[in-house]
Image (tube, rainbow, N blue to C red; front, side, top):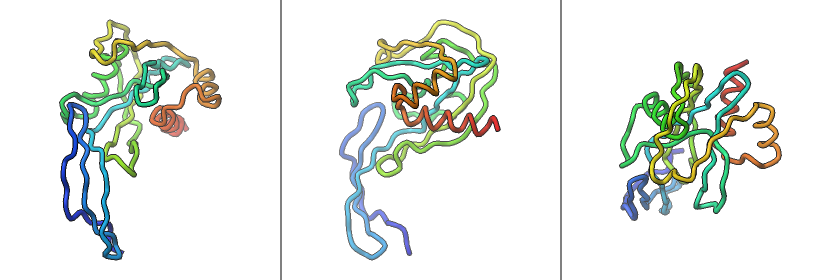
Length: 178
């Protein structure tokens, strides 16, 4: 069967971080439909690892109305397309103040393939040096902390860490360590 085909597209919203478009589509059986898509640039997620400790950030996530712990992650502003390794180093420094002596690519994640085109690269950061963070204005409420791996895993099991990208990234780390 042929895949779904785009027959029209219109942008319905844009800001410095994303666009939303509505596409007219043709399904494999020939019937028409509509698909809403959130377009965002590629993001980088960084797992800072020092021995048995993981460095996480906590911030308020407005759509959920909750503060939550996650690995440092983000995109470049103004919808810029930045090379993943450069973006990972930038996000790590910006959110935590950490500088990695070594960044290792662990793999690729799709955020929400049913509604978003965004994909992200996951990096392991080691040989860490501490320095001042360089947070953006939107990150002014951010906190950081080190967690033992056992505590991180307990928080995932108990629902204290629910960020899907962070949990999936940790799975990539576990697979890389095999």
